[in-house]
Length: 243
Image (cartoon, rainbow, N blue to C red; front, side, top):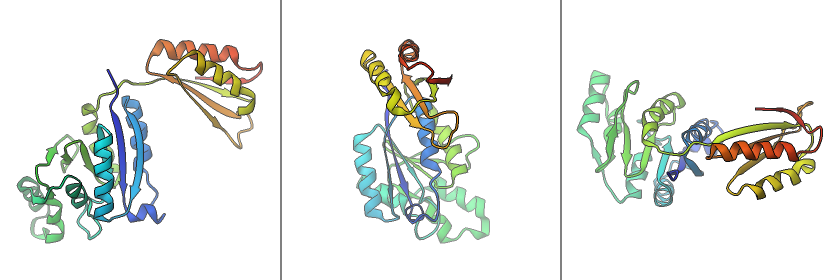
């Protein structure tokens, strides 16, 4: 089975200005990897409808799954739904189910600002799930998620069964030698195992480990044999520990 590809569109002036640190895309990247999807690109755009629309339209064309983060609340800068609607040349419509849910939740405090959250792109679908008070809006292959990390994570887990992939098998070796000393071993291993993924990550400030090396493949046997081969090729004394 071929793995699905994914792209993430992070939306928010607060991210671009540095006022808020983006927690969502790193978390989603990790979860997508665990699910076996290929995350191909992450982009951050401001709270501007044309910018959102352009990014969403491009990602929807390039990737199987697009996840947006942020811009779905009741305030003036929450324009993600408008951006997604424009990306697909659709209008915003008031969804009766969302409108009723918002009115029931807020009671006499249900003002127009809150009820704006019932406006979604025409033809969009709603995905419900346990532990999620408000459904996720989906337009074709675009899943519109909130910016609040705790809510985004709950909604993502509801969506996760929809995402099909081939999980990676991972092995790790920690080296006390620097990258220049182990580079040839890494290159030889890659040459012997086409399609293998090897990552090399320096550990500055670590008195014991100089580099963390990861060996990955969607084929468990290939991952195991490549890892064993790399251990044979590494210079004597390079290995601190393995995982």
